[in-house]
Length: 121
Image (cartoon, rainbow, N blue to C red; front, side, top):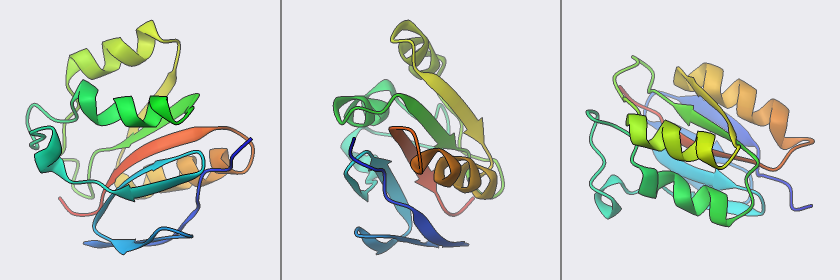
């Protein structure tokens, strides 16, 4: 099993991910991750995280998905995104970013987990 990279630092507008680097927003999954560019899928705070945003996590073998809502809970998640994950039998958690990081890191030790992390609002 490829392990998902740990998030070693989170603060407003800054994250550090082992083996991936430093940045603001990340897509993480078993075996790696990358910066999360919202422009790729047209993501905005509302309606929020798109089904296309999570497809890459699933393509890399994520069996659990953690979605962050931002530090101030501004980022939403489209109902279609949650429906897609449910249809595929993927356990999903939607939480404030710091709580999402804690949950993701706990899963990363033992479970193929993916996550989308927004480090500001």
